[in-house]
Image (cartoon, rainbow, N blue to C red; front, side):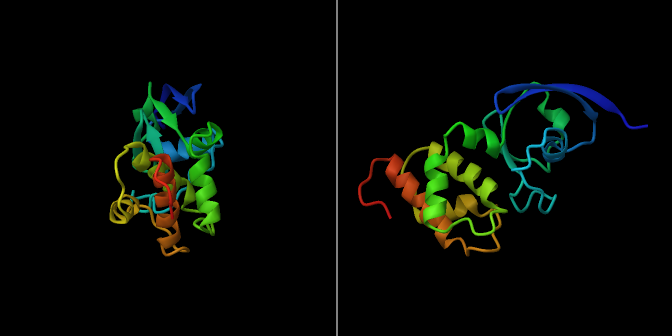
Length: 163
């Protein structure tokens, strides 16, 4: 018999109450129970970054976290962050710079980039590469992604002549 637990959390600023299997991962809960399919399942080992979400403001891998660990937490997925308009400039830069191609890695890349830029301060291309190194992309070779993130970071910092 599977053990089930009642959980409640805020997902994309909406209250959610569910009874779920204790062993269900956060990414499976988001996709299967809440139909939030923007968060992708890739390696299921926390390596590829496809399942990246925010829990109480911290960027985490949804495949490494159990949904029951988020009881009482605020969970933000790509849908919520996108719908709020918080990453509209990043989405536009990814499109302009051709940094999305197949799109499988894009949600995790956008959440990671938003987190990095939100920390403030000067961002070197090396710092951007380092920050996104845990998000695998098999299409772009990363150059376009780094270009897009750098352009938004410069624009948000008020620097003229952004790449």
